Image 1 (cartoon, rainbow, N blue to C red):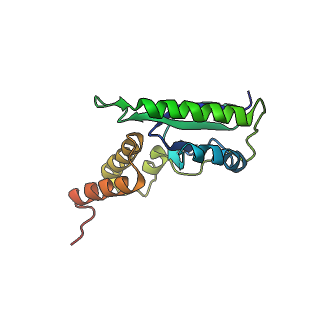
Image 2: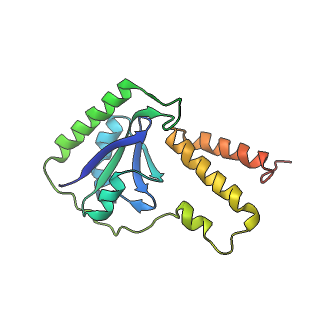
Length: 172
């Protein structure tokens, strides 16, 4: 196997670059595929809490990719799929396969943790107990909003509202 493409991210422009703190594609591979991704409207490289292709990335030496495939509000009773976006993601996947061909794209950077995970953030010994449950709620809310397809600006607004309601952030 030369690379892996998974279709398991919300929205129509989401590309998982880091998953559970582990990079799943290197800079060279990212730059190589960026023009095709951009052609299909894929511009949002993201840091996600989990996806199946992360396991392949950790066990093998090739680059992996996870693309948004037109679903929203996943794992809720309001989940829905936009068929045109599913079809678009498949078209971009096909273009990537034709472009990349039957070649192996070795991951060329050291796979190391780039960002803290929820569990190691909450395990910091100096963490103030008073805010530990609030911190866990905030982290879980951000993860939930990302997986529902919310953009960065909307997530910031939602978290700001949550902080204000909890009197952690007071604008007065």
